[in-house]
Image (cartoon, rainbow, N blue to C red; front, side):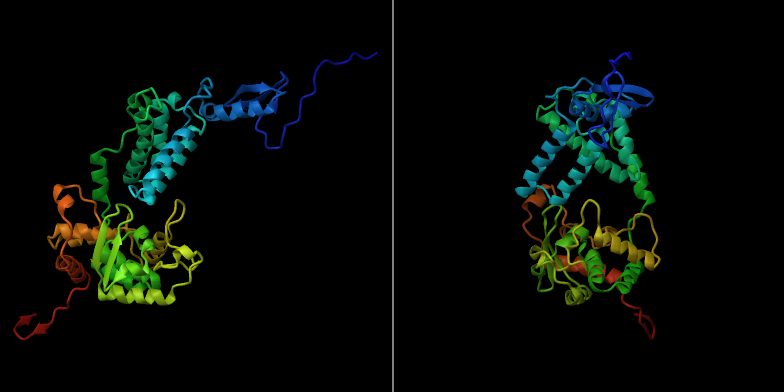
Length: 389
């Protein structure tokens, strides 16, 4: 007579993609970095899965997972609370939606690195040092500076609102600082983000339709891709562009060159009918009948400009569409009317004078615009009897 076995048959996985296996000891397990880890009995695969998801990021990084505290502030919860607070500022007009998008992008990167369910109180300086290395990958120092500033803002929110007990200095330690001023200055000196007048003329001559108008608006008005995407027909008034800067909300009033106005008229003629009724008044619409607004994964104007620059052979590290804005600021400053240049650029001033200054005369704004146009399209030298004129 055969002896009946007391060994239970191992259960099947609840679903094919279940990340754990049934261990002979009656528990769900997984081998990580050469070591077996156990996540709960066969009888409760859902609880085992939840434990795995909580501890996964720690274990994959070779760290011991902290004891689970259901009431602890998680990284995801902190990021959600912070972004919700910034959304409210967008709704009241205190923050540009583009700035909120930057915060959301960084929040996703933080949660992806630390793990959505990681407890904020359990993070260590070594974790932030590793995050800094990840944020730096494939980015220049200026971009890294912005990413670190966004990250610090998120964790400062937790500190200032009493969501954590540990001090921030103990949370991120000494290795999560921004790049030094010296390093940023060296980067700036190595990368001149300016176009020459001849390069801009080549860009204008080689472009057509909407892109031609956009390039001219970039150097005439110092507009970036987002501001250009937001221009509506009603913003062009009697030869002037009247538009608040999307980033700062600062009103801008800029005289448009004849070349710019002509290019805008050409862009209107080829403009497709937008799909979204909300875009009906937009000056520029893509061939896909959508707005030119950039998002976290696609920058349509920057992409088209890069193709144009490559096609005509204008090289130079850091020379993107935004370099037109750098060029306007630099050449405009040569007019010596820094206040008028700042107004055209849409800078948000913080001085007492900026607070009390209600407007700037049109003649001053025209003088700056004429100066930049004169640099871009210099008058040819005419030879006359007795010398040049």
